[in-house]
Image (cartoon, helix red, strand yellow):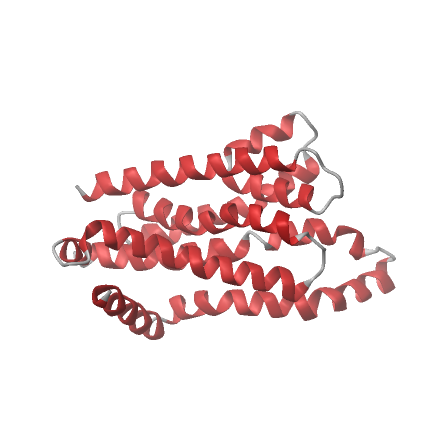
Length: 242
């Protein structure tokens, strides 16, 4: 427990000293404020000037912004891991009471917990679209796993922070998954199923519809896809360390 507390304090110091990491941690708060205050204002402006009822697209808007919080927090965690790997701190933690297993557990758990909290805050603070809490609880594991997946993607394939920054931009493309659902007709849109975020957006859209019989099927498939990605990326990262 002492080792985890020490690591947490180290994270706080590192993030507070790095403007990029600090801005990444504050970004979900700004995102919530933007959605809570900006979207209703934008709806009025768009309707007055273009005659378009933006409220008809709130489900699609939320399915897009719901992906941003775990993406941002995953990038934040990924940069921290890359820093620690470059400074050989992971090897140091491996021989402490924390152990390498404890290090990985901590590094993957923190973005999961923070991402879950911010995502729930976003959904229930913004309230653009109603979603039953029972369905939301089943959807949350997928959203939560997105953050460590992004972190491990950066850590497994980047040799340093510069490459990590480039890969973070590539990872940012996953938020385009809703576009596949909206603009690509069936059955071709199912090709997007190889992207984990596709299942978050698809399941969220189904969850906001009444009487959908396919919701649990999407939950199961999406959760399995996320677990496969998480396990595979963790194995790649561990192999890279060895």
